[in-house]
Image 1: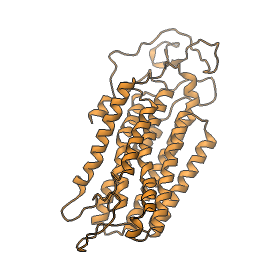
Image 2: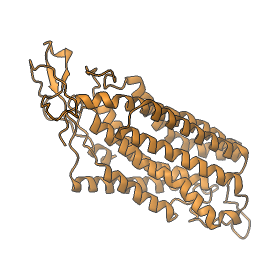
Image 3: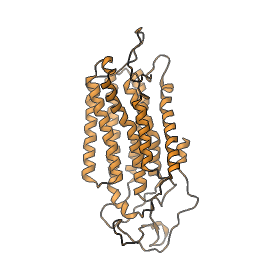
Image 4: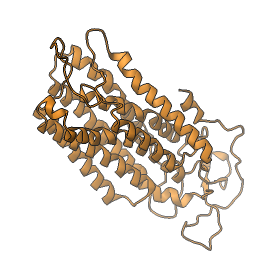
Length: 364
């Protein structure tokens, strides 16, 4: 919570509006143009009132490193608190296995659960197909930009995770298979993208922050550089490979890994909500440089909706009377809706990137 607050600083003075400045646009690739792009402010009372546009400068190396490690410490603590919250004396859904899947020798309690019914692996494959189609749609309809690159990476990670997970669910039939090297590699590839996607979420937030104007804001949010998110995702991936999230119920690994997306999601939320998103005039027919309020709300709701899948999983598994396959089917339907909404809304950001680039004077 305190890490999230540290990302946000409110301005100590109102924006410095410059009156009676001519509205001028310059293309980023025009080396002889020295005009500064301006944002028209119709609410200022003067027809020519305007505000010079720029983006947020990046944090220093030391500040970025400190925030990265604070975020890692918070998210790892959050993830490893989950077993203490949801386990009980009679049922332990989150029980560490470290890739060593064996039931107690006395046979009193079963603890290894891994579903191999069609309801699990077929819906995994359907999710992978959905991600592939959305990626193709984004690439065909929007120009390449840092926002689009991050979006494609995010959706591709989703697709790889469910594709490999589907293969494991279809072909792994026994605890002997689960204790093999092949399963360990497959499950690292399945769970690893979940923490890598945390880095992509943060990188998309940084890309939006560095692409869209940040002068006209409710509060200030620092720009976290891309290397910080790479470091963040890399350390978490090593934790997954070492068995840090490995549970006797392998599906539970995903929920612990998903907790690592909390800090990047808070960051992208702050980046989106700090802006006033006023309509802007652009010299090219690329759009207004603004993503509408409904689209912004859909992205944020779909992101935080994923957090509800953790208590849903526990309730459905212990008290719902559902089989593992039915539980996975319901969870995958939720993923299909949430990931689809994320991909389609992020495409809206990708479409507005060329317009935003025309309106921004880079200061970094």
